[in-house]
Length: 538
Image (tube, rainbow, N blue to C red; front, side):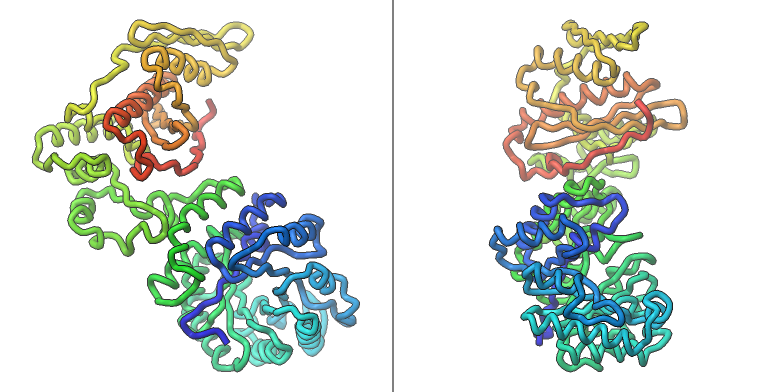
């Protein structure tokens, strides 16, 4: 038995997560994510279904070359086919051939599925469950039984659903996992039903596998643990079929920091949670959710002036935990809703602590920021442009690129010719794409004026139309270590881009002059690897 204070964690990103629309893992992806999960310290990694596809079969062979420190690799599969002999079942034997220590076997717990989907008898379904678990155990494999559609099955026929649990326990299942497969069960129902199962089982531990179809997967998981479950399944970032699975990125810190359970081998590993979350997003090619609890870009970002003022005095006023516990960090942004405290918060991140809220320069900078927001700027999406305004007002930075203009021509072949002049230095670039031509020309001129800026690269951009009259361009820059975002607003796209580009290079110079170039701990520099999507065709 697992101690009451411990909750087993099974990650199914590589199996259930792979069933999400738009998600596909290469063999290399699966290996990389497995190693990340092992470093995090989960107990089991459900890696795939041997016998279902060549990639998963290759994975189970390849992963043996790596020495995992914490996790056991689990193979996924179903109970034997109806009216068959388990020892002759190809899918069950494929699990044995995969040479794993753990198998996750799913079987039906809802009579609707037994009678209408499997089209077999309730008794035969019980035999299928018992035979499969017993057979795998006799081959030295620990079996985790996923009782599919358990909560719906229990609500319609509790006697049969509990019979499924008893049979799985009698067959020797290590854990019996109650699955909310359709994701439609409410938290109070999860608690009551899970509690009834916990009171029924004697040897097996009770587990949870929740889907998020009504947005309750995380809440249902936590309620199930409160009811006595001691095994939890989920995926990184909640990826999964339809609306996804329970998000381990939210569940793990909640179990540890909110509920006091031991859910990883080492609590310090939670400090890697944000990095792991972002890495998985990057591997699968999905945009990170900036509002994701615990690890999102905005999870500990403060915008309202009253909130910022309070956080500067005591972070607990508006933060439920220290963001560093999950590898995140506190951020302040400025906007038309901001007060002087927001600017002081930004300055503190830069190591500037000798300015007060009553300083007239702060008031002037804040007034300028609010006026620009009225014109269409959105500084919470591009804080570096706001920081530049403040630094100029305080005398920490003077514009380097004070005079600039641009002209663009398109010839009959469709080529764009862009001519840039900055500080009386001119460059011309020809390209099929006018935006690329503009960026190249600006780069060519700026590196002649300020050679050290040659390491700076505009990476991504977002374009937004404002009321059909103005264009807002947000640019992300990187020097390989840090990233930052600046913004420009104008009546046409090229002018907005030009302003954002100039601000981006000015910001880099300002940071370098402040001596922050080699300080990766500064949050505003953090490279989040987030790609912005354009909102219009360019």
